[in-house]
Length: 232
Ligand code: TIU
Image (spheres, rainbow, N blue to C red):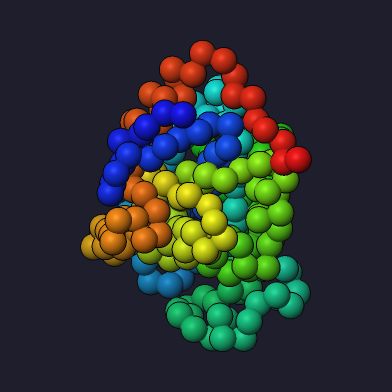
C-alpha cells in the first residue's frame, strides 16, 4: 500500500486492487464538429487533459495496472437512446445526425473513437455506455469485480457530468474512488473546480481528489510488475 497525496486525506493506493478508469476521451467531446461542440461548448477547453492522461496511461501500462476505457454512445438504430436525451440539449446537430466526424455519438463513427493518443491497447476493456454514468446499463461492475478491483482511479471528461456521475455510481457500489484533477476536464472551469470540491467534501463523501504526479511517481517506483489478484 502507498499513501498518495490527496484531499481530504491521503489515498491508500493498493495497485493490485486498483483500476485506471478513463471516461469518454472521445473525439466527439474533444474535437470540433462532435457532440460537445453540438451542445454549444468550446471543445478546446478539454485539450489540456490529453498530455497528463497519456503520461499516466503509459505509467499504468508499464506497471501493469488494470486499465479500462469507456465511450458514451448509441447503437446505429438509436434503440438505446432515450427520447428525452435526444430531445434535450440539441443544437444544430442532435445525437444520430450526420456531422463532420460521422453520426454524432454513434458506435463505429469516427467521432465515437477515443483520441489516438489514448487509444486502448489489447487487454484493456472498452465499455460502451448509453448514459452519463459508466455503471448504468453496462457490464463495468462485472468486469471490475471479476478482476478483484476495489479502488478506481477515475480520469476523463467531463468532470461534472460523466466523471462525477461515474464516481457517485462507484461510491454507492462500494468502490474507493480517486479522481485526478489534472486528468479530468470540463468545458466550464468553474464546474470542474466545484465538481472536484463536491467529491472530497464532507470528509470524502464521494471519494478523494488528487493529482497524477503522485500516482505516476508511485507507479514508476513499483519495482515489480503489479500482480493482480483475481476475484476468488
Ligand atoms: N455534456 C457534457 O459535459 N458531457 C457529456 O455529455 N458526456 C460526458 O461527460 N462524457
